[in-house]
Length: 63
Image (cartoon, rainbow, N blue to C red):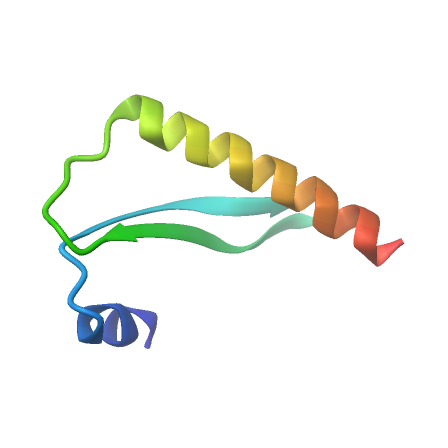
């Protein structure tokens, strides 16, 4: 389903990382680009850091 939505937006590049919380993974954080782009390992690492921080924020909001 998500792939169809993203394809409909005509994204040319897409990267996703798990969105972790204490109980496991609650979703995937996606970043896309309308132009062709090769995401680097550093890009992925930074996105993982953002996803981790979002997971902490979500966990705090649940309390």
